[in-house]
Length: 319
Image (tube, rainbow, N blue to C red):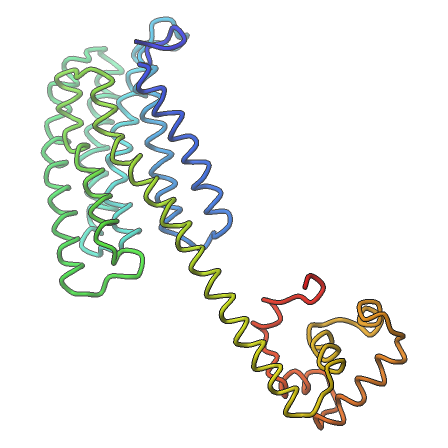
């Protein structure tokens, strides 16, 4: 069953919609945490997967204004581009040093070069798609099998050395990605034997859908843990601050004003929050300085243990 009078199967369309939503979620996560480079590499992976599904689903279509030769070049190119990104993704995301050759040279030589030679140059000139498929898929198929073995070997070595980073130390995650990528080793066979679109799309997409859901759930749990740790840390710092104020004999009002002052507020702002005059604020601060034996605000912050991390985690204006 196709949709909207196109060549795209209904299952392909559903997967594209799901992946678009997942891409939006992952993109939002990355914008919140742009230093998360593994997430960036996975975003690129999802983007390439979407491009592959859309081109695989829509092309070739005789009703499109593009020549059929051009449509086929784009459609096959999407699959080759996706497959050539895998070693780079594993190399960067999981720090698999053994994949450096495949990431920067192997995939380009044994996947992209055959594609450019047979599907772009020879097919583009002669228009013989059967010839391109018959001979242009031999090297990519053999290399795909070898590449998947190389990735698996690199993963095993990584775990044996016990030097895996925090991100790739989770066996479920790294082997989950590997299992999702594994069906792509047979992409050349799918193409050669002209496997039905919906079967090909299911085999090459299901693992990624599962992984994206897994990553999203894990990120929610991780964010919750980090928030709990932040709250616990803040409570501990607040307790130390209050304890030091008591050690210097500060009154409850002086404690509050000292906290506001160390948070960076001006006398006028403190007066507004505490409903007192600026002159009263000045008097309290002079008493605070006298009791703590300091002459400057920065010295007061050091005496009371009001660290920079404490200031960033707590703004009295919103308490």
